[in-house]
Structure formats: structure tokens, C-alpha cells
Image (tube, rainbow, N blue to C red; front, side):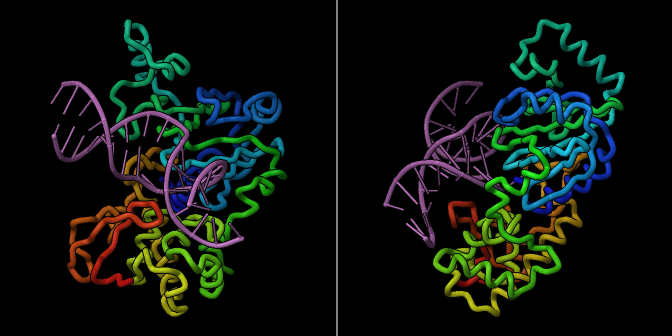
Length: 311
DNA sequence: CACTTGACCTGTCCGC
DNA sequence: TGCGGACAGGTCAAGT
């Protein structure tokens, strides 16, 4: 789920909440979520403190004092939620649940019982919790991921730029030097595909996903299924402005919560309330009142105003 | 090579 | 109420 604005929102929250804290322990239930958790964890994670929290594309980089970094991708359903400390009430409730002869899930066995009525941001850990980082002051950072697509890796900070994804990922669309002409040049790398596929291609540019592809294309009145080679430079220049507009607006609104996304404090973002086409199928286009249609482009659910957005 | 499609997972919703 | 199928914000590997 999380695209650039959501990951940036989490980054800003974590920067405020965990920089300077010391990690004293880590628990993880699903090997794929934290594939290289072994000897390095003992030596370079436990006892290390958080130096900075950065973002590149949709990836979070938590730099540690040990010269290692935690590299985290939330993929579709990942969350990073900081909890200052377990309340007395929480501990009692957990004890109560554990005390009963309640059927426990595998996660509950590993992490201790979660609350049975967890809402979007309920008591943690819950059954989607994959990794727990414990800090020396009693606070914790939970990596939750319902679909298990996301991952956390511990790497030497100097090796981070060498991972395959970073070697081929495109430029940051909100960087000062990402001009309209750079955008046009990048998008035209994929001349023979659809504009939506080009925007979603992380090697073309970084951080755009399904929401902001649809929203920016609506803003620029370009049909997502249009071939890049059939789109004029003038149209692409408009798309550039619209893309930067929706990304900045969404960061201002704390991102989009369509299903699972929450920020570092477990709170929803509100961009979806400002969306013009995304998830608005069968509703009127805010520009021309035509009913918005949903179809499939580039293998993804795609929202279009059939009047404003001509192929 | 350029581009498209499935797979990775769990959960939810919708129609029968 | 149950059950099968489609679908969900991302990225790879495998296919055409």
C-alpha cells in the first residue's frame, strides 16, 4: 500500500520518535520478514542506537550507531508503529487473556497473546506483527504486515546503496533537481508502454504507486492506457506538475489510508478524502460530473473519468 | 531486449 | 451461514 507520501509520513514520525533511542532486543516470527536476522543482530543491532531515519523511493532506512542500517520495505500492508510503553491496563489485559484456556495462534504463542478485538490500530502486538524492536526506555517499534510481502534487513550502511533495488531505482520526484524535462526524459524510456505502467515503473522514477498514478493522470486529463509515445511533451509537463502536486498534498495530509496504512503513531492519513478518482468508481467526477469508471490498466485497478481523460 | 503476466500472502467482500 | 472467486496500495521472476 504505502507509496512515497505514506512512507515519507512514517519516516517523519519515526525521526521524531526513535532517533537517539537504543535497541536492546528484537523478536521476529516470520523468517521472510527479517531474512538475515542472525549473528549480525547480536553484534550490530542489539545495543546500537538510532542515528537517523531516511527514505529512498518507498524504502525506509534506519541508520544505526553500529555502522549498520535497518532497511525496511512495507510493500502492500506493512506498518511501523511506535508504542511508548505498555500501560498497566494493557499488561493486566494480556495476563487475563493468557490466563484463560483460549486457543492461541502461532503469533500469540511467540509474542504473547494479542487483543482479540484489534481494530486497525489496536493493541500491539496483534496477529499481523512480524518483528518487534524493543528500546532501552521500554518503548517498542512494531513491524506489522498482514500479507507478509514486506521485509526488514540489517545491512552495513555502506552496502545499502549496493542492493539491487537501489542500483536501478529512478530519481526522487520531489527532489529540487527533478525538473519537468528530467521527468519527460525518464518517462520516455518506456515509449511503447502505457503511461500508467511507466509511472509505476520504479526504474523510471521512484515512489509512485497506484493511488498517485491515477490521481495525477486525472489531474493532467491523460488516460492511463495512453501509450507514452502518443503523449505530447506539453501533456507530460502538465503531468509532472500534477504528480508533484498530489504527492505534496498527500504528504501534507499524512498519506492515504485505504485499508491498512497507518503512520508511526498508528494513525490514519486523510488524503483519500481529497482524492478525485481513486476509489471513487460509480461516483461523479469532481470536474465534469461524469460517473467515474474502474477498469484494469498495467494489471492494476485503474480509475478514470471517461469524459476528462481521453485516450 | 521490451514489455506483460503470474506469484508471493492474508483478509475481506460479494454472489450463489 | 458457507464456500468459491475476485480483489487489495508493490515488486520480482518467469513468460511472450
